Image (cartoon, rainbow, N blue to C red; front, side, top):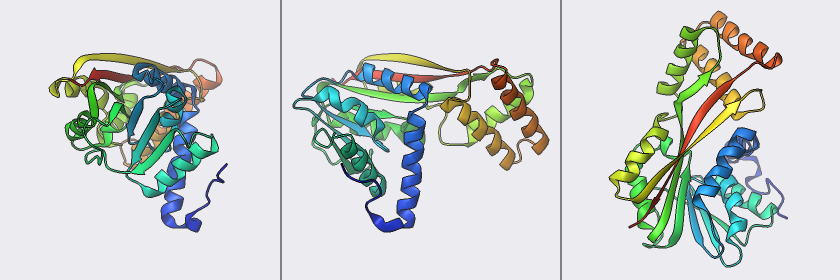
Length: 272
């Protein structure tokens, strides 16, 4: 077992990376995120002996989820642009005795260092929504996959979000601001099919995953709180509107009447 936090001695880079990794690990424990992650694994369908690549691996949650399916003889590589996050993700893998199945490396998804046809499959989850030129990244993913190998992409589409709230105008104002001005391209999920078709991938198939939240134990519910606080900070809503909107949702949670939902899109394609 490798002890966590055994390096960098508290540097600013380490503290920032550790905060990101802890957030990703905590988010992955919510039931809605587990649902999406397992669905992604099922679509990718990792097999023993295969070599896989994850672009934008973060804390390594998905690599660890896939790894045991590759044994014996297989391996998964995860790349991330942050050296500090890569070191932490390797420690997580080591702590789960998966070091022989997972390797994390520093790298950019748009400039992969691997030779053509290095992998049986590649995947990227919750990544392309943050990429300025997603087609450039997809081209690199295609390059490093063997002919007949598979590419799996996944992103949410924030404008598929619904929540049961009495104030429709206020809800739309919060959601429209969140969709268009926070955390990247929130239409990415609906664009993945087109991206795959533009790149001439074969047998492109879409798997929509609908997640539902009926309590506070949900990554989606946490996203609602962040959306409301962000809209407040940016002056999109007033403090009174924020209090009223959030209070109604918290009361509906208390009364077991709360409902919210969003769609994630998983898209699978084969390299010619």
